Length: 136
Image 1 (cartoon, rainbow, N blue to C red):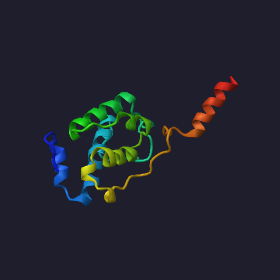
Image 2: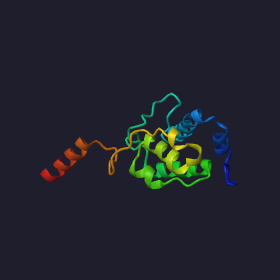
Image 3: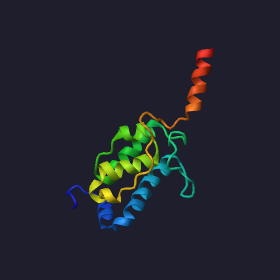
Image 4: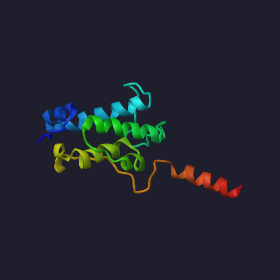
């Protein structure tokens, strides 16, 4: 099951009971986002809200991608982080595309995935900005 390039974290995931693996992955992802957003362990990071709305920049997302790749020993799709910027989507992506051997399909419980093209920015805000732009 393990590969020669498996990292200590991946070996820990492999040794973890199947029902406990999602929580271990969530812990890793939340730790990375909290560090990038300068949040404490008690600060709440909503899973279904854009992390860009909480102050993360595209550079910060790229840094998270690189740290996750180093920890996981696997490539993480940068487009997934940038195009669907929620923790929920990233967790689903990691379970179904990156760490598939550790999360059998029956055990994968992805959170809601935003529709294609949803940037996490409220549509009313975009509408108001465009209205102001075209009315000036």
